[in-house]
Image: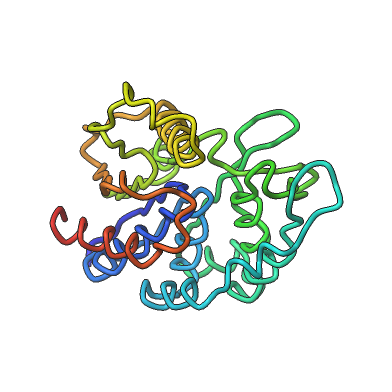
Length: 260
């Protein structure tokens, strides 16, 4: 079991590929450092506190995500309050803190975005559930989350894949990164008018826009000898495909089996 850091990108429903990948990786690596954004924050934090990949899978698949959505906000800053999601995170993490993890020899770094200043925020202290909630608070969908006197939103706005930060913070020899949010379908024919003008066409356009944006954020040397980056091909799935979570998870597991 080789010591390694684990870096997980954001990606909404595509984050289930992280879980599938971990089913293979946890048999070969002992992670002592975790970094994550949004969906990657949930998975990395859960594994850091002791859940196996199979247990994380069971937790996610047991949830009724539609019931979590009926938590409408009365403010002008988000459709949902996020209280039900935060209650679920509290149940998962049992009030555990970053400091408790450090006492066990594990480091966890969660990334969010300061909605006031637009600056990147690294969270490494306090309750893990609060940090994860901040990191996944997608603007418009959720209200900004108040933490450490800052209004925080999804970390993907300021950097969806925290590899460069991990290269600076982690002194170990091996860093594994899984990027689930930048694979593109290169066969798409944009000359076909049917791609536009429909709800599905607009969804596809937005999906592709964010994937290109996330890829353009990445500023690190992929040839760095300490790095091993995995990019499962999830171009046929969308970040909002909550009805295809098992398929996405299986795709992540299959990819790692073939490419590890």
